[in-house]
Image (cartoon, rainbow, N blue to C red; front, side, top):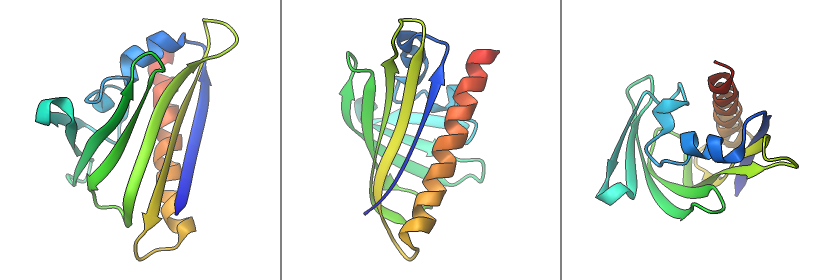
Length: 138
């Protein structure tokens, strides 16, 4: 099983960050890689479109409002992996004015090496968290 993980510290309270990223359909609000998200099955699945027009379907596996995290599983995507599970979490740092956001995932590469699969998601997570930081600098 391969992995990827990225984190970023923000000068924004964790509750404020969670208001932006905590909705399962909110990726287009802060992640440029995903311009469109439609919820289905009562909000338990999301149908995403990437800039190339490829469809990504993900299922919400766990949601923790108090802990400011959710875990999801990819059902369909153009990525060379299977058994993909990822968690997005916003945590309060030492003061209530700063936060750390962690985006991590585990997956089984399919037709590529662990390193190649990890690199794909490392770039998505890193670029996504940079975009999140830019959103709060506006």
